[in-house]
Length: 242
Image 1 (cartoon, one colour):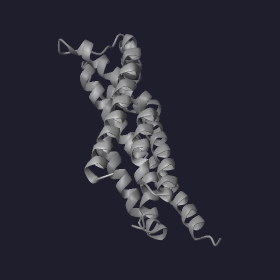
Image 2: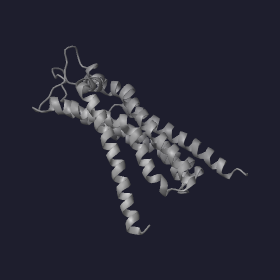
Image 3: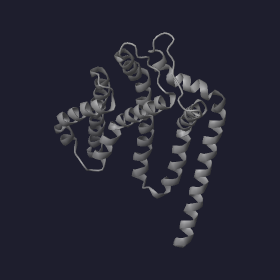
Image 4: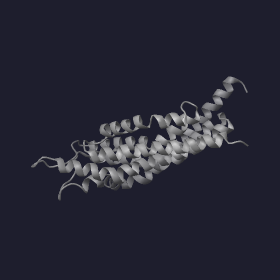
């Protein structure tokens, strides 16, 4: 097969994979659409639970009551379909990988996906109640906290991404060691800098209360330590005589 024929075959394969992904996303979204408002209510529950009795959220634009729940349904569809999407990504790139690369990539993809979901769950279940409790308690007397639903969604998505990426630290550590960019001993040496950096990130991505900052910094540090443990185990297994 010539170069041009091979390139065309890859394009056809890519189109097929993208079509499967698009159809899967559309089907899941269609199934979730009737419950779009319920999904938003579930997403907003951490804030609603901290508002004073009778407190509510508001919509400042005409179209936001329709489009914001729609966005939440699309986000939920993406998360539900993510394993299927990753499967097709893997099927597309796998033929170009060596056997040892395949053995590494699959566990990393699975671990990365699970850790991202864990980061989102940690933000929703543990961080949001603390953050929104601090925000509502800090409102001056006579000020009613009534957050716009679109701005709330943007804030929540930002926090989900921040914690989802934070929970990728073990994967990043393992990759750095596996690729020979940095050694395990070096990772242990720079531990103090990582701890300081974790608290700096906590101050940047969370509201200005100590508890919220700790709730991002401490998991980041612990996940870094977990990455070192896993990387050490992989290095020992690689150097073990056969």
